[in-house]
Amino acid sequence: MLFKLAFRNILRNRRRSVMSIGAIAVGAIAMVLFGGFVAIIILGVQTDTVRRTGHLAIYRDGYFTFGSGNPAAWGMPGYRDILDMVKQDPVLAPMIEVVTPTVSLFGIAGNFAVEASRTFMGAGVVPGDRDTMRRWNPYHLTYNNAADSGLDGADPTKGVVGTGLARILGLCEALKLGECPPPQAKEKPDSPLATDIADLADSEKAANAEPADTRPHIDLLAATAGGAPNVISMVVTRADRQGVKELDDAMVLMHFDLAQQLLYGRGEKRAIAIVLQLHSTSDMPVAKARIAEVIRAKKLPLEVRDFIEISPFYGQVTGMFGAIFTFIASIMGVIVLFTVVNTMGMSVMERTAEIGTARAIGLRRGGIRRQFLLEGMILGAIGATAGILLGIGIAIIVNRSGLTWLPPGQSAPSPLAVMVDGMWKLHGGIWIGLMLMTTLAALLPANRAARLPVVDALRHV
Image 1: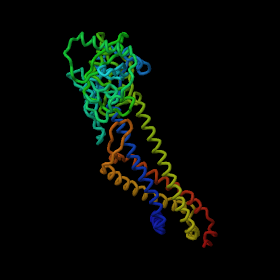
Image 2 (image 1 turned 90 degrees about the horizontal axis):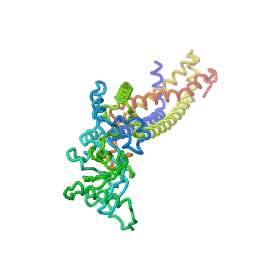
Image 3 (image 1 turned 120 degrees about the vertical axis):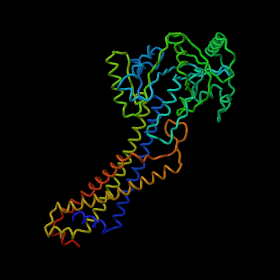
Image 4 (image 1 turned 120 degrees about the horizontal axis):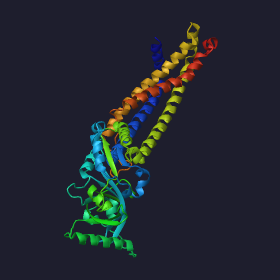
């Protein structure tokens, strides 16, 4: 009976009730759309990060803190034994999608046919493993479909550079890059370093006595683990645009064997990291704990890091969008709060005589309070339900509209999408939150109605 009376009281002034329900629905729509948008951004950034760095990486102990300045000195001897240990572990094996060695290095890249050079940041990867990692897509996103790595497992001399580096080294015409202006004429200062690199490259080619290669190539100089300079030649198969200009102007992706040859020369070949990509991100804490346990048990001088530590950008993006969502939800909550307080306050004023009559025939203050609280809860439930359903409908329309935008850290536009499937936790949280907010908003008018003196309420006109 109390619920029936509360529902009838809402219908007594339909215009005001519709306005209140509309305000609640608008708040729900905003949170559904932005929450789904944030969810798909976070999953997209996670997918891109895991494709690039994997879920976990095993380094020599201390590399993560100090090794980036001199990667060669922090290489892992006997890395193949570590690979076998990970692959054969009964706990880790069912979780692993890919486990692969990588090499990181720095040096100078030069195209001395046009007398151009620049410092580069390189990565050596196993092509087949890299291609498998780039296909990781457990969330079935309709964008971020990565192309192959551009490397050739059968030809370790082939590699890929960033478009900015290709432009700086004068490879635009050879690689048929669009929107690549020709190099500007400039004064050529004496550069002993560039001359030395060119001489080293020429002596290396002469020593190998290979026939001339007409494919676009660059010479890479780096210091070996022993500190001696080493130069190799890499054939550039293509240039890929990176999401960050600094990376685009310096990135060199090469075959793992070629990177080892450059970094270790004729010495013992090592890997800088062992990268693990798992089937599911939810397995990452268990896998990380297991690797740490094995490292401690075998007293190996190794450490394990997850992709959140390796790529701080992921944590920054999730934190930023989480703060924005909280801010928007707070604003919507305040709007709903004041709307319902105003609606219920007006209802109390209009029904003062009715409240006095109810009190006079024996209804206690708690009954009056419960009735107004139930009216606020019903308003919230109707408005939240309508808003969530409308929000889902709008999200479906947006997903089918073909709109695009440029996500953070990417170089190509992606479809503008709002996640709908699997968002029951968000939608349930919005529904419960708005219903609690409207119930709370009705508390102040309900208390005022319950405390009205019976005689004064009966005399109210």
